[in-house]
Image (tube, rainbow over all chains, first blue to last red; front, side, top):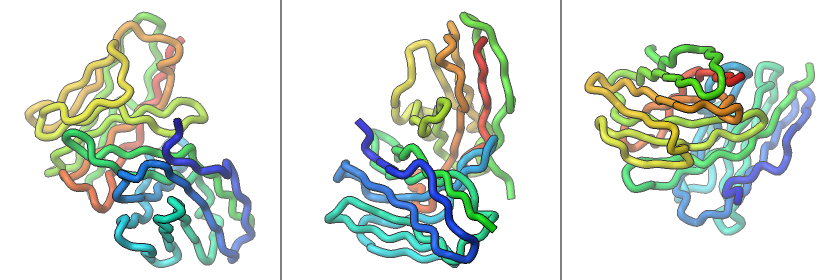
Length: 114
Length: 113
């Protein structure tokens, strides 16, 4: 049962345009959501996060929107750059017995075309 | 800035052999997590340690064990390796409350042949 879903395995966007990556979740216990960017043969790199008490967080070209009622979040990248081409993972945090576990989506491969 | 260091980067083992993966967290981070990412899959939580004690357990097979040492580095021990254990193994570290997300290492790619 996939608790965090990224339904688009890939996305192609023209350089300079907006990239929108979507993520849906099912577990109401998630209290924090994170986006990670991953290049091949490297570990995931933290990009941006949002607490469940907020609906928007912005950091430079990256903005994350959270719609709790719809259990949906999205990452907007404006303007998109070729260096943004990578796999983007949506992750949700829930408190376990003693630590915070992340549940990841399967990722969306973003290709930014020059 | 110091990052999470994992060793080795690549490891090739035969079926039924044993493998040990090492993780050196960012200094002063008190929590270490292990994740497994199979080919084409999302990272799956295996196990975590807080202050050298196991704090949570995810989908870690009984053939695997892990521990965190006094210097906070962690080792993932994998015995009776199977072909299906071939994957990228990521270690991450954080303070107890990772509101800014974990920091992941570059991973160890384990290939079982």
